[in-house]
Image (cartoon, rainbow over all chains, first blue to last red; front, side):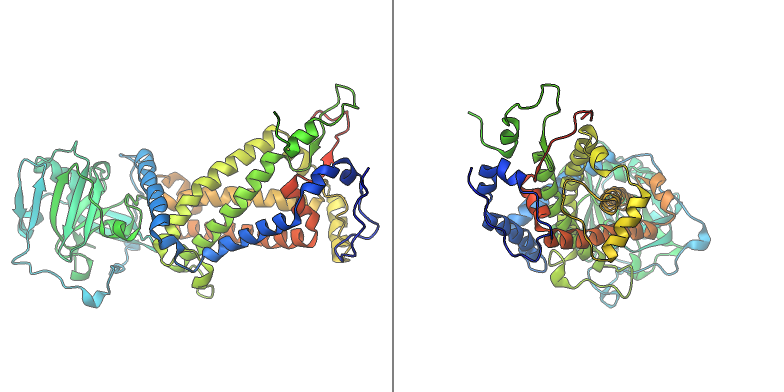
Length: 264
Length: 229
């Protein structure tokens, strides 16, 4: 039998010696272990962490993979979405006034809209294609909900929203609700898109008021989307157009790499 | 022709024992090693991408993770990576748990934990008498550590699922009280796993044969015949 290598003087070697029998029993196997390979493996694992902080995740190849998985995650979320499951609602005393502002630019850069010129244009697969004025929308039956707003960043607050229930609005305008998507266009160029199941959820609305007052400029005056089942950024502000469509519409944040469905 | 995997070497060991005797196995059978290293890589990515997401809205004002330590230039990249590796974490984790229960590995390696032994191990450790001559037997502290990190892993997945879908799983979210509590629990589960990782890696480097065993399978264990494994 081939002798085992002489003992090293490593400080890690336990006093009293190690049981050498396994080494003899599996001499061939032990010989085949390359310490260098073990070391290389350990270093590679460390190298994985070197990905952090640099832009590897932003390279086209990596983005292709990550965005494909994000697409798959859209489908997963669609599958677990409960169309009639209501989000928790809260007492009016918990409502944050004013709500927390967020956009891809700061509040000082909010341009706002000219209410005299403003229209909400409805197009696509609808019976009644029309450009709505604010007064016409205010005249529609109103729904109110006190729900939690959850931002993709991690913060949340409770808000009180009133406006026209989106499902009721879609029925009113004769929209083909078997279509796949609702695309929204905003005065600042922002684009959003909802899957039809979310659009038809009882807690999805075109909001005109916050805390019973007309929504103020930074929060989407005169019309914004508000749904209880999506992250904050899906709730587009300063709406100017809505299209009922079967064509997938990429969104502002979706284009940036955020998940498209972004349900909660 | 059979490939000369470590497993095969074990299986072709001369049949010196009676046929009824349980087959000798390695300390860490092939599947355990594969799942261990998949998990190791996955956990690193999950934690470092999680830190990127945390940075968008910190829970503790005094705790920030420097950008060079987090994955992705921007939050969306951290999110993409997190929601990529979550699948691997869950699938690999389920496979590991199923394997651990089905093969009796958990029962064999992680229980029972005797209180007296536990106290002795703590005392010995405080006297720098780390008993690690036999890597095939876990001491009670090790057992608790491994059970603890499995629980922290389960909690991180559960709280992560609720954090991802607080409305779809609003019944589960109610268990946490508030949405911010879900974030906090998810963070604490990460902290527990991270704490385990620090000790685990430090000890593996301190007793290198444990690290080697997770690569080559470690010593062959010949179970006593009366054991029903």
